[in-house]
Image (cartoon, rainbow, N blue to C red; front, side, top):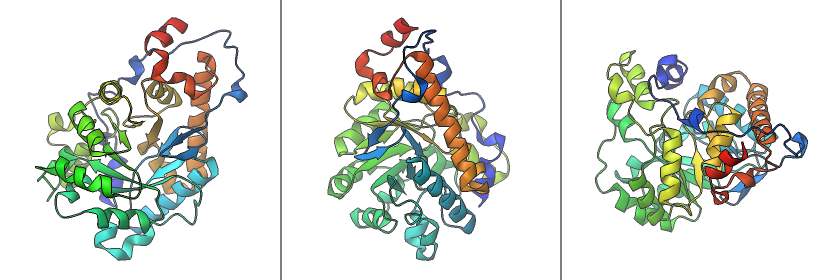
Length: 335
């Protein structure tokens, strides 16, 4: 579980790059004309209802400590009516004995549950059968395929043969009996990739921008115990920029905002930039090592911040933040 230990270190976070979300203006209305308790946070994503526009992001699997983390996350997601994305299931497909560390459906029968496989694996032989197995064996509803070339380049024995992968995914995705989303892992989704993914039939995109956890840094910490290629580890597209660029490039594709989402105010700013939901991972790692109650408490506080930001901005629901209202002019004019 070296990756968990590395993620807990401050050095795993971007040091010079920020998400850019703090620079997104947010309105303040002294007479908001809305009641805090009446604000509607309910939404849907990939055809499943959510009590708030929040997903628990991909973290881990494959070991007993990972099983504890996943089960605590699942219980909290069920209690709060949120969605959850599993960590990479490659280890599950290659070592069936660790499958139980991913199987949390018994604890969360009602949530949107998203499986997870690496894009690189589809260039090395994975196909429709492996994708279906990953989702079916955990009782999932959808599959995330993560793109992480910089992380792989930093790994010992990382998968760095990516030529032809976009074409390969374009063959696989239309054949899946459930929706798939393409996600980065925290270095940002670029416009060219977003357009290729939309053309391939991905149902949603997770921009996973820079500014939070740098998985290039994580891999350096695991490999060397320190960050040796600091400049390479700071590469990426900040979350706010990735959201704006991808929203403009593929306006009809639902977006997930992740990568350095730390507060409810971060969340509403990301929603205002065009995300349908936000995903949170690193802030939940320590609570998940503790208990489901700790995870629930962190998420409840986060959702309260989100609701309060809407309240002081005079918004009665998250639907009012959609880009059709003319962001950024609408938000600026209302402040």
